[in-house]
Length: 107
Image (cartoon, rainbow, N blue to C red; front, side, top):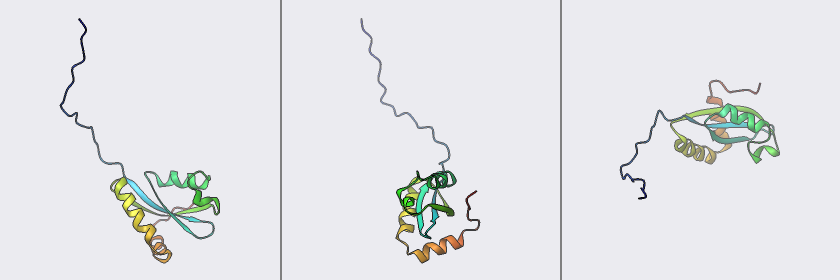
């Protein structure tokens, strides 16, 4: 007699802890332009941008400074905030940079 595994139709509760914070960030390129992105670790991501592996944006002008970070509740909120920031004029993005209390500088 062959036994078959029993199936259970009850949902298995997901183990969830506090949501991992995500960030929207701005990086200044050597030519003065600003790049907006999201990450769960903006300092690590900035290092990737500096190494030339983060985004094609920095192929023409290298990343020089992480100038703005904003904590978000989750990845979805970070994506929404990124979309809003990308729609801003450069002058408005510069205001965000000016509002940053402790801009990160490269080591």
